Length: 150
Image (cartoon, rainbow, N blue to C red; front, side, top):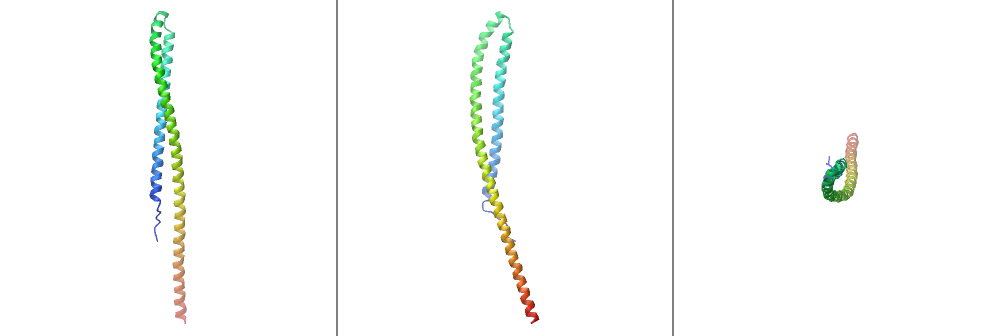
């Protein structure tokens, strides 16, 4: 019995590996996006907390701390804006990776279907060959039986 060998098997294997790699990259991007988002929320809540503390302070103390708070707030808002840009950049990268992943998955599925068709063709060819051998054996056996009875 002839073993099934598909010439595009290596391409299917490489495509499947690439799909797994892209999936891992997508998960890493999702973790990065989540981390940047948490950092933005943390910085905003820290500013809100400082502002609430400032609002509860006595007037004399509040004026001195207010100048310091606004200087710090400007720096924090710049950091938050930079983090927002980073977040948008990561989201754009995720969108591109998602599209690449989708195309790679589609290729792998197509290659899998082609492999399955080739395997079925191979199985049918083997069945035809086996049937041919059985027919030949039966014809030879019939011819011997006819010759022996004659």
